[in-house]
Length: 103
Image (cartoon, rainbow, N blue to C red; front, side, top):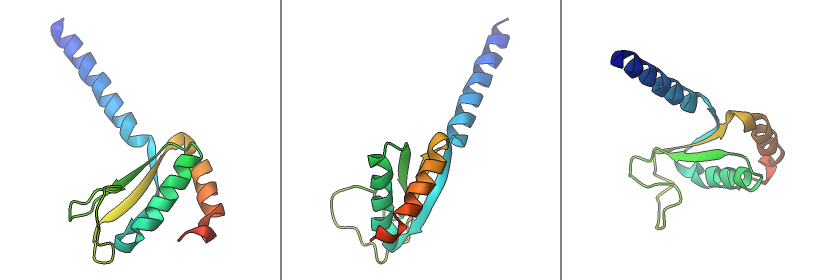
Protein backbone atom coordinates (compact mmCIF):
# COMPACT_ATOMS: atom_id res chain seq x y z
CA UNK A 1 0.00 0.00 0.00
CA UNK A 2 2.92 2.36 0.69
CA UNK A 3 4.13 2.13 -2.89
CA UNK A 4 0.71 3.29 -4.13
CA UNK A 5 1.03 6.47 -2.07
CA UNK A 6 4.55 7.00 -3.40
CA UNK A 7 3.28 6.67 -6.98
CA UNK A 8 0.39 9.07 -6.31
CA UNK A 9 2.71 11.66 -4.78
CA UNK A 10 5.20 11.28 -7.65
CA UNK A 11 2.38 11.78 -10.17
CA UNK A 12 1.15 14.90 -8.40
CA UNK A 13 4.67 16.37 -8.34
CA UNK A 14 5.11 15.62 -12.06
CA UNK A 15 1.82 17.36 -12.92
CA UNK A 16 2.70 20.42 -10.83
CA UNK A 17 6.13 20.72 -12.50
CA UNK A 18 4.64 20.24 -15.97
CA UNK A 19 1.92 22.86 -15.39
CA UNK A 20 4.37 25.41 -14.01
CA UNK A 21 6.51 25.11 -17.14
CA UNK A 22 3.63 25.26 -19.60
CA UNK A 23 1.81 28.18 -18.01
CA UNK A 24 4.31 30.80 -19.26
CA UNK A 25 4.75 32.07 -22.83
CA UNK A 26 7.71 34.00 -24.24
CA UNK A 27 6.67 37.39 -25.68
CA UNK A 28 10.12 38.96 -26.20
CA UNK A 29 13.63 37.69 -26.84
CA UNK A 30 16.58 40.03 -27.19
CA UNK A 31 20.35 39.84 -26.97
CA UNK A 32 23.23 42.02 -25.84
CA UNK A 33 22.38 45.64 -26.52
CA UNK A 34 18.61 45.00 -26.24
CA UNK A 35 18.75 44.80 -22.45
CA UNK A 36 17.27 48.30 -22.06
CA UNK A 37 14.43 47.42 -24.43
CA UNK A 38 13.73 44.23 -22.46
CA UNK A 39 13.68 46.15 -19.17
CA UNK A 40 11.40 48.83 -20.66
CA UNK A 41 8.92 46.22 -21.91
CA UNK A 42 9.07 44.26 -18.64
CA UNK A 43 8.35 47.38 -16.57
CA UNK A 44 5.52 48.38 -18.91
CA UNK A 45 3.87 44.98 -18.46
CA UNK A 46 4.36 45.01 -14.68
CA UNK A 47 2.82 48.50 -14.39
CA UNK A 48 -0.31 47.18 -16.11
CA UNK A 49 -0.61 44.27 -13.69
CA UNK A 50 0.48 41.62 -16.18
CA UNK A 51 2.18 38.61 -14.59
CA UNK A 52 5.58 38.40 -16.22
CA UNK A 53 9.20 37.46 -15.61
CA UNK A 54 12.39 38.91 -17.07
CA UNK A 55 15.04 36.24 -17.54
CA UNK A 56 18.70 36.70 -18.41
CA UNK A 57 21.18 34.15 -19.71
CA UNK A 58 24.15 36.52 -19.72
CA UNK A 59 27.30 34.37 -19.80
CA UNK A 60 29.16 37.10 -17.87
CA UNK A 61 26.97 36.22 -14.91
CA UNK A 62 25.24 39.60 -14.78
CA UNK A 63 21.66 39.36 -13.64
CA UNK A 64 19.04 41.75 -14.93
CA UNK A 65 18.41 44.51 -12.43
CA UNK A 66 21.73 44.17 -10.61
CA UNK A 67 23.53 47.35 -9.66
CA UNK A 68 26.75 48.10 -11.44
CA UNK A 69 27.92 48.55 -15.01
CA UNK A 70 26.98 45.92 -17.55
CA UNK A 71 28.64 45.84 -20.95
CA UNK A 72 25.50 45.62 -23.09
CA UNK A 73 27.37 46.26 -26.35
CA UNK A 74 29.57 43.16 -26.08
CA UNK A 75 27.24 40.99 -24.05
CA UNK A 76 26.22 37.73 -25.68
CA UNK A 77 23.47 37.11 -23.16
CA UNK A 78 19.86 36.61 -24.03
CA UNK A 79 16.97 38.45 -22.41
CA UNK A 80 13.51 36.92 -22.39
CA UNK A 81 10.19 38.17 -21.15
CA UNK A 82 7.74 35.42 -20.32
CA UNK A 83 4.09 36.11 -19.53
CA UNK A 84 1.54 33.98 -17.70
CA UNK A 85 -0.70 32.21 -20.19
CA UNK A 86 -3.79 34.07 -18.92
CA UNK A 87 -2.18 37.44 -19.74
CA UNK A 88 -0.57 36.70 -23.12
CA UNK A 89 -3.12 38.46 -25.34
CA UNK A 90 -3.24 41.53 -23.11
CA UNK A 91 0.58 41.66 -23.05
CA UNK A 92 0.90 41.35 -26.84
CA UNK A 93 -1.65 44.12 -27.40
CA UNK A 94 0.08 46.40 -24.89
CA UNK A 95 3.53 45.81 -26.38
CA UNK A 96 2.24 46.43 -29.90
CA UNK A 97 0.57 49.72 -28.86
CA UNK A 98 3.80 50.94 -27.24
CA UNK A 99 6.25 49.64 -29.84
CA UNK A 100 6.87 53.15 -31.22
CA UNK A 101 7.80 54.46 -27.74
CA UNK A 102 10.53 51.90 -27.10
CA UNK A 103 13.98 53.32 -26.50
